[in-house]
Image (cartoon, rainbow, N blue to C red; front, side, top):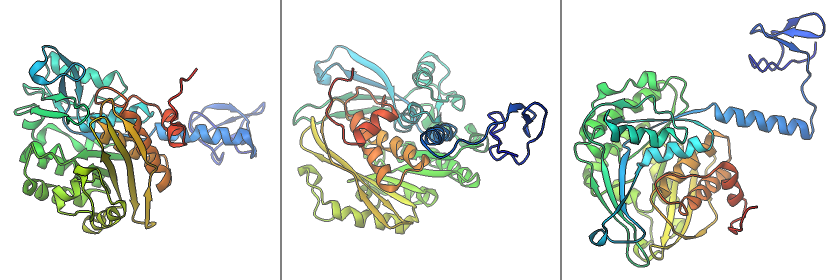
Length: 400
């Protein structure tokens, strides 16, 4: 009997199909389908395999956990002291990653706690409009956290001021989240070092989430994301040393490894925009050895001014002992907030879709390079746009 393909029960091999009259077959799920052999090797088969791969990646579920905040920002490049109007949007590290993944076609859910009032609902809606699953968000508390952002220009750096004390998520407890239910059918969990910095109670929530993720066989990624305005280096080191024992894929930048764990690349001066890329091989290996990570990604930003940065990354694959550096992008920046998150989203997508180490870091860096051209926290790019840039087309020519 010829092999059958049933779109209803995905019985690809036909082992459970039984004979039926008039060239029909009945699959294991009970659906009647016409007999149809597999496509032979060739262009049609390749297209079919590609579409099946797209279907598979779209079925993968990812959960991110963190704080979603209001972003208030003076228009254009005004300073706080001269502004009389502020632009109102939303953003937050893990939420930004969820939006990227939803834009790439994955089933991405964001978990947090937000008030039940209108501002909390506006925050939820900012994610829903881009396809992020918000059904796992707990409602309660009184405040949505705020951050004020003053965009830098030329040699003047950007300035971020937090007003997030007593936000709903910062006062959450472990009882607010049923992680066993949240991780049902999930393949990947992502959080950042910003979230446990909100307080000891949120460190405990992160710990419970990581334990549940491991129990469900979920891969865990963490972007170290040290924020000196939220906690001290000693506090960060204690909490992240505990949480990183659960992490499979670690994301860091040229500063975080030093700030959190005291691991520093030699011959590097970030304030002068000079990075020793070879030194980051040692940083990645030390991180992997310390926490038994499967992979370590390090983003490499060479800041020439607030407008002009060189941008690249390295991905260390422990299993294959590969240290893969991406191509270097010369960025003229529109908005750099969310640049690291867009890298994380691109990396998660790449690894879930089965890209090799070099292809994965190229996709992630290209995704982030594009984000630097987009206003706001969220990265509104598609897989074909990222792959086009990763493939070498960075001309910026009008697409007609």
